[in-house]
Length: 222
Image (cartoon, rainbow, N blue to C red; front, side):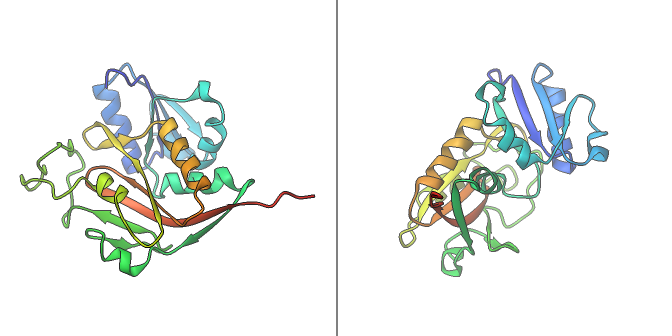
């Protein structure tokens, strides 16, 4: 926490406001910017706000390293890393998205397939408290050892010739986590340079989301 001086919170809905409230109360010296395209949602925030779609904001601002925050907190109902890669690479790459195969879904703990074929994954088969401090060893809810660290489990997946690339979400305060701009850009670069199908996941110790995609460079126009 002491090294974090600025954060972007993407989204001013339930979880974005929760993140803003917790950071404001526990870390008053952190510069917080909340981004949402809905002005009525931003009206709930007392502080720095930007009225803009979260993904387009990332595409625009991450081109300028001198404007980066220390941490990005995704609080919008999409897989931010996936959407950012699609939007940020559209001029240079063709990206094909495919459903996560059912055979692979069977290997993923408590997996649920989303409407677009993505996989939602969790160590828990119950509703976790929204203020879980994500302790390293024991589950807050059950008091038992965590069955796996999900980000590590996903990184080690071996399925066909697919490459598993994981963006780890790290907790800042209980129930609030995110990743650095550099980590997001590193993952983007790994995805677009990989010729094999990529299992792109964002995950913390217990929860994650996965998309399956494949990239190729757009042909140069003559």
